[in-house]
Image 1: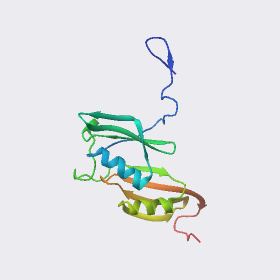
Image 2 (image 1 turned 45 degrees about the horizontal axis):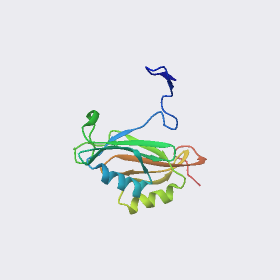
Image 3 (image 1 turned 90 degrees about the vertical axis):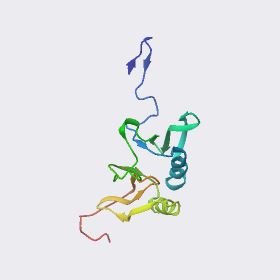
Image 4 (image 1 turned 120 degrees about the vertical axis):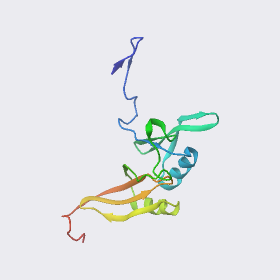
Length: 154
């Protein structure tokens, strides 16, 4: 709890807000919102949308209990990897309920699948994709099937 100047107690973060929220730069935020919705199943949080001069400069999206922020390039010194000559400097890990269907949805929407579906030794089924502006995502479904590295998955 934190106290603000009028003496009222407030929670930080506000109720329902995750403690960590990645803030990702996009050149075309409206296009990214559409693309992330179609490809990965995110939903925009309308209250998080900020427009300046008729142009979206910030918004927030959620998937399950997770949230991301989308901001204009250059904000906080961050730029999208695609078109800026940068390789992704981070990867976002997201758990979904049906990773196989999620992968096909992303592929159909034009995502670049950079690591095909694979059962991992730590008990997750995983694929990796680049979004419309080159951010790298890792989508997981926990299977509970653990095995030694290098051992067959059968």
